[in-house]
Length: 444
Ligand SMILES: Cc1ncc(COP(=O)(O)O)c(C=O)c1O
Image (cartoon, rainbow, N blue to C red; front, side):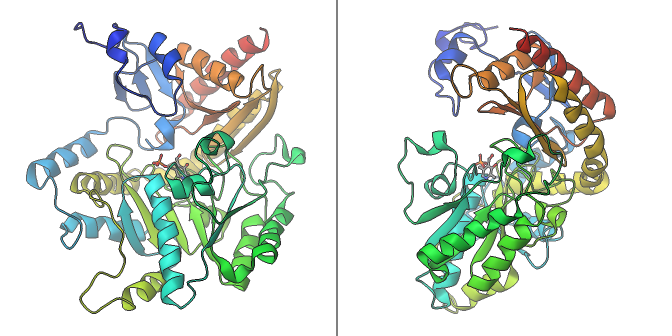
């Protein structure tokens, strides 16, 4: 290894400002990966680490898929880039068509961007533009929910309901109201959708009565909150939100950046929970995380309304990114669509969900757990807090890495969301390693 290798040289670790990370701790005590394959990541010393959260819930088909690498290589060798404004390349249209064959109802118009955060801010703009061209430009307000995560751009920060992601940045954007979260004390250790809590949707009506429903552009919710630590929606909750939005002329947006593409055991949370939004955001898993790509799926008539109100030959929607529908991302997305079809990945996720959730809920007896939640191929174990909020979760995440298991932690919850190629023995490995690490921690 060279002198400037950050694996061995502390100085070589200093320039990179790591996102959402304890920089000082990591740089003194790095926990890195140098290779990935299938269900596993590899440490610099060669140790094989099972990826229990599919990276950040995005590597649905397992690491380093050769089909995707080849497709990206071929694309970059043929047409590396074309500007996406007023010009295009065929794969953007092909990918949009394929995505639209999975999205619910008539959400068949696909706007591309580069990340989940961008998909959220794009969806906010689409909602505002839609109302404006219909003469309802007074609809400027948004509603979201406590404990939500909608990315890190300023619109998304304003929508988000996680204190650490907001407190340093001000309101992000004025005019956002938050409904109550759905984590009720009586729903602890409930598997799947809790029976109690549908009435929490009435909070939307409360906000409508406070600010005037006719002033609200859109309601954003994750069908099941992901980043906070897996909060499945109470039964009937999303249906009630849908009803209120319809009564009030408000657009319902599902942020499916995590719940989309099989994570819930259906193509999207919309299908899993039987409620269709008007706009749906997505990003993770579309390219198996091999290339950055996000997208917004929009009801056809929303697209038509905006597009038909524009000039005959002029731009209709003044929004887009230099890397929207990047050729390499679209090539990766198309290769991933092939994998979804050929390997029936979404069906596999649905078929493995029970075994996975059985395993996760079997850990209930470990001392020091305050909750377990799970739906589809996503679950969270919440640990009793330590000296400061989040300290136990962070400690667990480090100890699990040291025991050769990788996952995401938020606060004191550790979050599981394995790739859909997981076999039963992989799930067993995840459960066994988690049991031994959490048991050891409970004895300290
Ligand atoms: C529901 C939701 N929305 C938006 C985002 C932001 O996505 P990105 O990190 O790709 O910007 C995330 C990321 O976890 C997410 O879970």
